[in-house]
Image 1 (cartoon, rainbow, N blue to C red):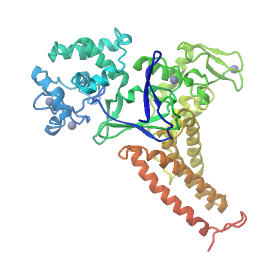
Image 2 (image 1 turned 90 degrees about the horizontal axis):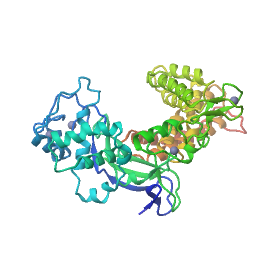
Image 3 (image 1 turned 45 degrees about the horizontal axis):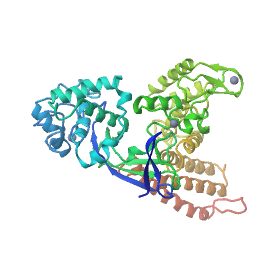
Length: 498
Ligand SMILES: [Zn+2]
Ligand SMILES: [Zn+2]
Ligand SMILES: [Zn+2]
Ligand SMILES: [Zn+2]
């Protein structure tokens, strides 16, 4: 075994490396203990979990499926189907809007997990999982679960006597705290949830040193992203690493019921990534940061002058900007550039809100309407390069090593590097030697992207990109081999050969 499960009073169970692990080393492979619809989900087929319009039903139980083939899949037939059928609980009219949440489906995944009670996996692994019942009890989620899941299963599905209310809440808690989002195995891959008892033992950290990918058969593979020495703890992340501290901690508290105390959360500068830093409106070059980021209501203070901002005012300002980001046209380059201009005098250049805009732009340049590579002037190639380098600086801190985030950014970076170099050479703005150097730099970037993305499941979006990146790398390497024959390189003074 490459890892070892340990236990202490402070955090409960956690995982350490049982030997020195290299970056990119897979140390855990696990099948899902349960797969089912997300807690809040639009109508989905209970066989394949694909999104459905809501007008086709299982011939036995009358709940949503794509058709008879999906109705006969064991995941449905051998689980909730028999229970719904024997209790004669029919699926009510689906929501008129097929993208709206369907509360009736909230009971399905908990019921599937309940049906495993007594199995070997339940007793050895699932029952040991954290459910935070004490923290959840009486809260809004608990009350909603009581109505939509507990009462529904006990009364409507006639399961009283088989399960207790406490047991059903435990299962709801286990899923809420531990389930991972996966993609359904059908094309389009809508979000579903899956439970991995071993993976869930890994503690959370806002700077993870592992990465996991879930394949279409819902198997998860977990690997390191950086070298991990024997005895060092292995961490995954339960939140979005590109969010600022206050947003990550709020999400973790609300959905996972704990207050993150990791070194990134404890540092007002977020280890130098500055995703929560604001510009001081009073002095020049002062940065405003939370006085104590581990206190939710902490005020904000400039590190240079004595300027202070209350927590409420800061959160209000952040919310206003975030709302503008949330409603942006997903394709609009111009609106994002405008917002960056608008807020760059108020936020640190690396603040999460500006970084979110820059991250989107780093992908839109070269792809969006009117901004394909063929249409982009050198200036915009330079802009794309600048944006990718910005993202890379942040990723190097918050998701270092062979992380998916870095793999995707490096992939985005290689093409504008090549195209800009070619264009400048054609304009005689670059010597042949400089062209060769730049091509070799792009090769390094692309080779790293290939290394990282090749660790992903070949069927995933990243895995498919890996195949494309490998092909591009071969072509680039050929170009680089041929380059010295096409350009004469003589003491830095050269011209097209032949
Ligand atoms: Zn289906
Ligand atoms: Zn059925
Ligand atoms: Zn943290
Ligand atoms: Zn100041």
